[in-house]
Length: 107
Length: 121
Image 1 (cartoon, rainbow over the protein chains, first blue to last red):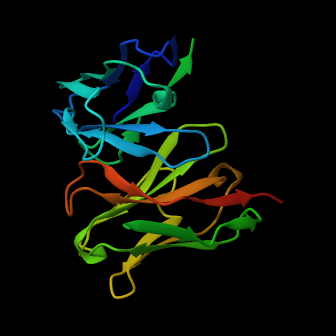
Image 2 (cartoon, each protein chain N blue to C red; image 1 turned 180 degrees about the vertical axis):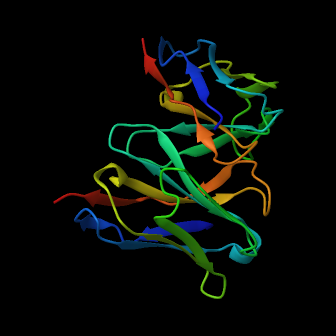
């Protein structure tokens, strides 16, 4: 199985900050990576698929990059509604696997 | 609007069975792959199973293989998860989610609100 490792596990940031979250796959997954945002008590929301494609309706301050084993999710200017937990997920092969999550907290 | 609504969760004893349902509306259910994803209390997301739009293929997480069965009824716009031989570690919120692709995985773009399964004696 492909292991997905996210870092950091949590980050404290202020409104307006640039935030970068990293996801590393245990083996190459080409560009088969998705990013999700989850708020407490809510279902996850798809932000990015195929590593860098922005899902319809998602603000352009979110962007994704990377291929192979190393990927990043960047929030260019953190907004109050962005405080949440973020997960990466590989879609290269079964079983699909998620990263452990990165909690973005208010500084 | 596009919607997925799960049902069927509850409290069940270890070793027993439960069937979850996921009713889809306002999109052409029969043209999308569909997933089940779960989240144990206070934990991260765990993918459980997927079925392609035409039932041609289904895949499972190792942790549920042989115990859980994913199925769908395209005439009823409904996805199912039959869960047998339940264990305490199956306790979680179970989400159904729509796959962006029909026979390839890109990401899950529509999610239900989740249904809670608690396995306890």
